[in-house]
Length: 338
Image (cartoon, rainbow, N blue to C red; front, top):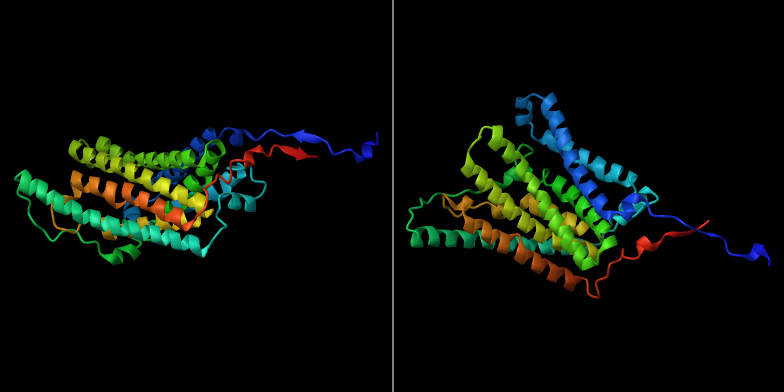
């Protein structure tokens, strides 16, 4: 037999450990994300005078943004996840960061606009229900006040607590981590339906880390021992987990249908940047901001369950055709001709 015409030999190459064990990689990414936020903050707090840090809050936000950028755009690609990328451009393609379409941008804007409308309506509804419950049913006397109105100029004030610049970090970096990396790892192991649900749950539960600061404050901070404040903060974060989970599922579905990370980045950034304009109570009840009714309304109707359902319907209507897991077969590419 003429061996010169025989096909080249086939060598079976095992997938790297991080690819074969997606859950290990997922936990690792989430831990690194937390550490790349925490460590720069601790170093900055140790090196910089407290007065400077208070007067220039934007500095730590810039440091945080750069730190997470190093993690997600340099360190994670070096580990060759989520899809054993052979080069940097392939990594950007794997997380769908290079795909930009007008349709995707419009879908991101439309879903966000629907959310803002529902959010404003839920805040107004919660004010009406709060007054009905506390005044008409419980008989409490609630003083009317001008309410809390957010000054739009704060959105562009680098020293403000909530602005368009601060929103860049969660808007971009959380989407890179949870939709670009973690969701793609989940799609390797599960169907697309199960993957987006798990991704949303992970995204929502990750917000439990927002309890870290209040817990430290409760133990040894200026508000140490204030159990009522601490319980209120626990409640706030608890509802945040619910609506973040709902939105996470919708954004994961958007990522799969649009085959692009840009729409979810746009939607996430817009909500974090401008959400204060519609979510900060401005109806005029002093106890309104800490009302259970407020949290229930905005979570179910405003920025959580109902908006997520409508967003999924909008996305499904915008991208007709069957929904498939475009990554379910990529892990089988373990045969290489040599």
